[in-house]
Length: 120
Length: 110
Image (cartoon, rainbow over all chains, first blue to last red; front, side):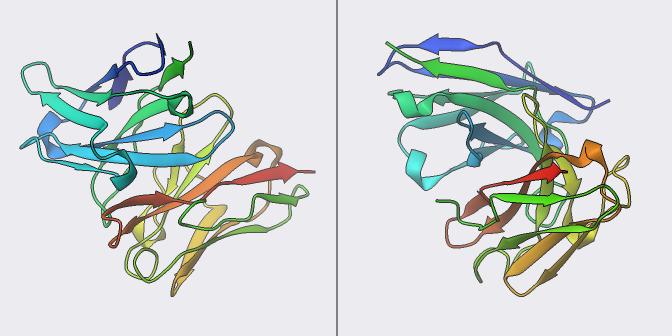
């Protein structure tokens, strides 16, 4: 079955960076884009961007431009999301999800989530 | 402030029909299909409905959707206690060149 397994919880200080991994399995890795979505405590869902696992192209949410980087390691079929210069408002659950585009069946499988806590 | 607008809460009694709205603009719902998600506390969102009002395997046919212009709605017929959850809509936005979500609707089954 399709699974997306994410790395474990992180505790970071303000100004630091965090790198979260997401390893899909159960389907051909480079046939779907992977989107990242985060959810602050008690808040709604916020799309952060996607990475094309076939060619490495990325598309980031404008408000995160310059702070977020998404990469893929095709040798291990793993995608990574790095967020730099963390602030307290970056404390959130971070999810990766399979994305087939606007007119496709997108977000049909999600990772279990990675809790990132930013605190001094 | 979410790009797509949903009511923060909705409620109904078992057996009732409940509709959750999602309002957008020409650059998102006016041009792109809507996806709907259900999320229980402490868990990842679950896809409820995708383009053309299709449901993934396992989603009961009590859940249905519609869209008109720049608004969409999710209807739950024959409400059950297990439907008490948070519901989110999402669509691609051409102006933002990204996915946008509604702020979520907390459904309470009375």
